[in-house]
Amino acid sequence: MIHDRPEPVQIFADLQSNISYNHCYGVLSGTPVVAAYRTVSGVNGPLVILGDVKFPKYAEIVRLTLADGTQRTGQVLEVSGKKAVVQVFEGTSGIDAKNTTCEFTGDILRTPVSEDMLGRVFNGSGKPKDKGPSILAEDYLDIQGQPINPSSRIYPEEMIQTGISSIDVMNSIARGQKIPIFSASGLPHDEIAAQICRQAGLVKVSNKSVMDSDVENFAIVFAAMGVNMETARFFMQDFKENGSMENVCLFLNLANDPTIERIITPRIALTTAEYLAYQCEKHVLVILTDMTAREEVPGRRGFPGYMYTDLATIYERAGRVEGRSGSITQIPILTMPNDDITHPIPDLTGYITEGQIYVDRQLHNRQFIALDGYILRRECFVDPQALLPTAIECASTLWKVPERTTPCSHQNAIGINAWKVDLNANHHGLRTQRKC
Image (cartoon, rainbow, N blue to C red; front, side):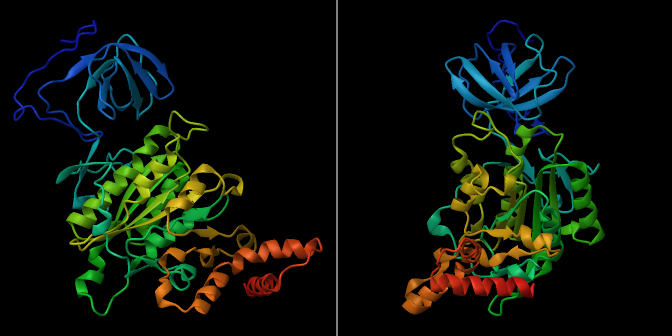
């Protein structure tokens, strides 16, 4: 029985016989005490404000039951005394202050994981989308993941091939790295992501075991956020036609899905990748697109003040751990609004990740699908003790050659004298573009 007064209803039951599972978001509700309230004082966008709540906890999972019996899941975003602000993942449409019941589970957000998730399609919250049966979970893991001790990380050395020559030849990606692709509206980043999924694989290493580079030891976790139905259909059809779907776990958050759900979609995908890598000992490639298509409250332009920390909790989950055979490699794809690299998402992503790959708009306009892989900044991977000072100077100059080309061209156009090294860089860059 649920009372309208603020006093919570105490439901006592045997923990062993009363453990139930919320299949929507993987919330264990087998706690001996569950507090239920009908004290909704306001609804604002994706937020529900509750009053007269006893002992609410930050990040606690809340189950909301509407008047028609529909259940939704939210998370406590802010606590102030006896008031709690709950962020509803499925949106607040249809929630009224009188007939909505809110239950505080006392647990965190978990997701079911299993090796059988490969070859399946899920929505942004982890529920099956391919009309298949529910996943028989082998474990329920916190979507925030477990922190990796920096001293237990293994230096990335073995290569993952993407099948794109400008990446594999000029700047190969090692297992355990996180290299984003910076794109923009109108550029073929969706086709690039699908091509990587079709052609990606492990490179055999001579001194490693055969199983370490076996095809069955490789998996891809693909998470698409804020995509329209046409793009989602393109991904699913492309994976199935090329036979790569059996090694792909696909998460799709559509454009008409609640925007607040995009916060948990990459975390559910990475939790699945961590299980496949560290428990099933697979080498997992995680592709996240589009990282810019997210919105969270509170914050300026929909971006919270803790954006840097929030993105770091996503990108830093890549790597290799000592004592585990698997690895997690991340290739997040993001679009720069109006080609603005100072936008909060690409700006902070550049600080966290280990270099960036740019999709060149000018070459795309010339009917080339070109990735400026040579713009990657890899100073942090160069061992100064292993290189001569002259080699370091030459290497730093070569990395900046593409960056010098455009500014130098502008200087020549307005008649400003340029340095000799800039003129050489400009000549090299223009010659390369003419050959393309």
